[in-house]
Image 1: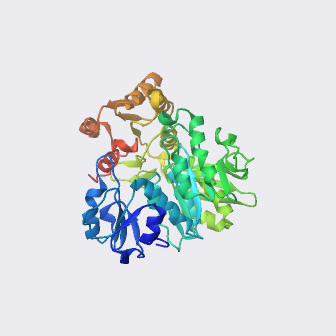
Image 2: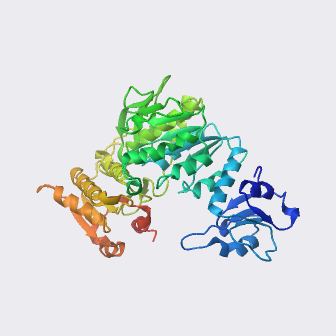
Image 3: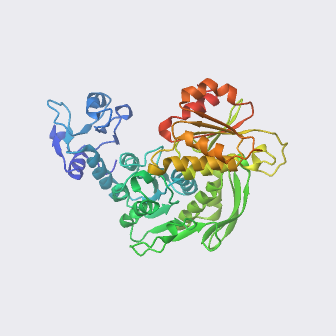
Length: 476
């Protein structure tokens, strides 16, 4: 790692070095918080968590080959070099800021209430056709995950695509001071984390704090179809670039054709060109993700053929609109996280009229098959006083879309079932079930589902609905 000697680290973190002076100018190979990820000459950061104190794993980290440790405790008779800091989390931020400052890499920062990860994946897929790209992996988008992602940047990387997620006021400033984006991408302003941020205007205020720390000669890319983002007037005077479905935007899409679970096609327009592309992941929201990537690609002077190739190369991630063709069921695994906007988008995919496979992604006619649509939905978190109302609205949508079977699991999900029950008309055939726990549901699963069902699984990540996906796919 460049500019990452123990001396550099000590200065960057405002720490105190303890140990043999011979180690002071040695470089670390990586920065890790988990002793299981230690490699030769790693720097192990002893973070304190709610359940686990990283300091207790220092001996294992040294035994595994760590060169040194960031510690909040004096380590008597350590026998290895370490750096004492007041707070390891703050030190992690300071160190990431120092490290990125010395790397010649362009940074794309991505935020929004929904679609951050799928937009990040689309942007990285497009840019990777021409550049060496590092992207955020998994859920490493917070005050701990972002610096650990930054430490994965190496000299061969030309662009870092960094997802930046927030929960409360002040979070974005904390993240953006590290990332210092050259390009800022905003997907939408919804109601995720409204419990802490109170209103959509509060969410907008916090998300757009990224702009105060960006490259003053950089690029801002906004979803012009979002009623809140269209009001943004950056204090840094950088004129935003907009994307959306309206033809007045420089990046827009027409001729959108829903292929159901086989994806979606569209004609994409830029200020200088027009081209067609097929995206294999279903959902109209993927068009917005592709348009955001289109804006980023043009900021990097990419060619149309490379952009199209990157769009079409995108593959789904587990838990993120991932289509699983199991022996008994077809599963839409979207259980990584949930908020009202993302649940509505997922339900629109499930309700697509193309689910009978009347036509595949290449336009070949296929035999129609009558298949039930099933929504297995759990609680959505961090919605504040409006939580019950927002869950009922999801149930109302299930009824309007005429989903065949609703299975609601959890305390708040009971309101989903209630909203659906109150909204169905006498002639509707939607079957509605509610269970307090996953265990209650598992006891009845085989009585509720039928061979050939197309099943959406979605809930907040903390509810552990990946277990449901595994059982449906016969993995558990």
